[in-house]
Image 1 (tube, rainbow, N blue to C red):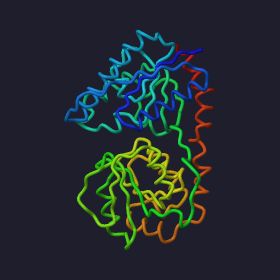
Image 2 (image 1 turned 180 degrees about the horizontal axis):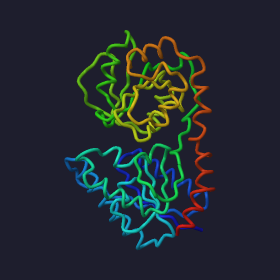
Image 3 (image 1 turned 90 degrees about the vertical axis):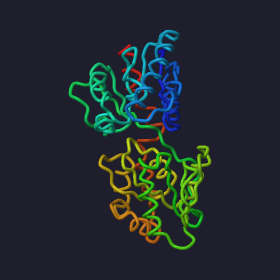
Image 4 (image 1 turned 60 degrees about the vertical axis):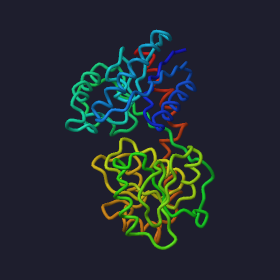
Length: 325
């Protein structure tokens, strides 16, 4: 049995959840998995310093766990967790610093990242685009999506009593200002936009803040929502959008500089709902929805199903980890 140490940065609830899912998938494949979670560091003011204190926290967690557990293989979850790693290991990542840390925000991360990628025996990006900007000569690459499943029985028609929902824990990154402007222009009396992930915002007509929700409560709202509105300025993976599609909501979105899986699916499902005119797309989705949208989305989401991810982990990832031990 291969003993695997998963070094979890865990800086967000989404990262912690995806790390737990990967660990469970490895265990189903027959590995013995230990998770070493970085302790949250103090808050600092810049992205460059934030990455530094989190990378140091991950190094401490990894060094201690490697000494205690003596694993056969190590996986660092996120490139940040690997930047100051005490030992070589596989790297799971959703984006590179060269793409999401421009200018001064990535002043030390980008050169360090090139060296780290060059010596990693195995890279586990969560999507085809996660390695955009990677240098030549990197190690073996296996794409391992974050598993996304429908959270409950699908609802149809009038059962979907919520007009729109969005998730905005990081309002600037998620383009909440763009979403609110579009919603203000598009909404009609009685229509309400629910915003998960934040608790404070200037009052706005037809907008309700949900604050931080438990995962099951949030997914239950997705099952009732007619559409999910996205205006992200940057997305590494777009797990919230994939969850919305899995639960039958239509995805209405602006374009982004770098595409991500859910955006590609949204374009294929209904091109009218993706583009610069977010307010217009909202009205199209509410007034003239594509018949069978949710049913058409289901097969496009097949590669993100837990069973599909389990096959990749069992047939490709675990053998690769064993071979690099």
